[in-house]
Length: 338
Image 1 (cartoon, rainbow, N blue to C red):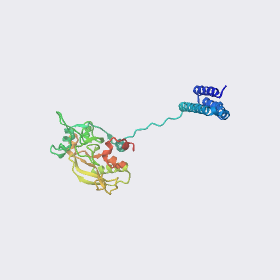
Image 2 (cartoon, rainbow, N blue to C red; image 1 turned 30 degrees about the vertical axis):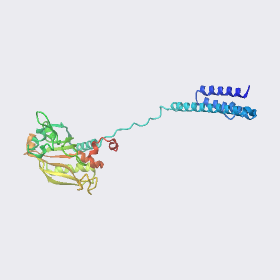
Image 3 (spheres, one colour; image 1 turned 120 degrees about the vertical axis):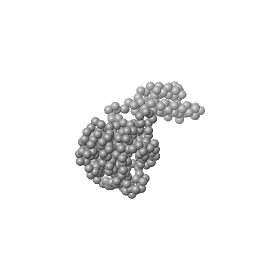
Image 4 (cartoon, rainbow, N blue to C red; image 1 turned 90 degrees about the horizontal axis):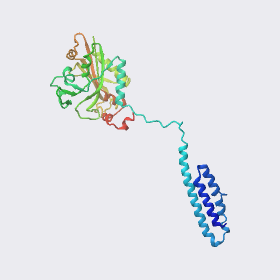
């Protein structure tokens, strides 16, 4: 049998062996059998120097082409078995990659913490409608018809027969709650309120507020300040500095505003506190006798205090958020930090 005939026979056998290999191991054996150091094709090619010069060049080129074709086929088979092996090596008992967990919004976290603190003080949590009757939002809270808070620039009015508004505070829930309760009561009302105002780093047109109400015999202003101080220290820690100053609200008398030293800039002044170093945290005061009467409570025998705080502002201070608008941006980069 001539050199060329042997070359064709070995190449055909090698091609069939490579193509019919069922796994990596059988392919390796076939490569060793034909292309290895002692493989049949390798041994045959080593006989080229003994071939007459006239045929050596032609047969050498044919042998080299056959060898390259077989090596290419072997590589393709190796790649196929490698991809198959990676699937076969899958171990179903190995724990999978942990699923990405969602994040609780910082506003939700703050509301939950506020509720938790006041529950330890014996407060009941109540809720009310966000679309409110004007009589609950204004009239029964001793806010007269000509009060600036009723102006269209501050309040969103709802078109319809009976006058309705998007509640501007959670105070209306006090009145609704007291329709089915009698003193002594301790209530807090967390919820969303709406103000028709421009937004900036510390103001939003849709915000969250928490209203508090305590009514009993002998309630004094010092009870109010003590309750607020205890709440703020529990929420922010012992390093809390507050100050109170007289203020006017139609539904309380006397009224006050509580300010806290800005925890973001530590009183140095920043965009959140408008460079003052202080943030107004809440309005408060003793419940106005007229409001008590509207609750069908005799102010001669009972007294009470009320307060309203911005939850968004508490959230900013608690988590060091410099711009309240971030909380409603829907940006996952913001939310995944909490």
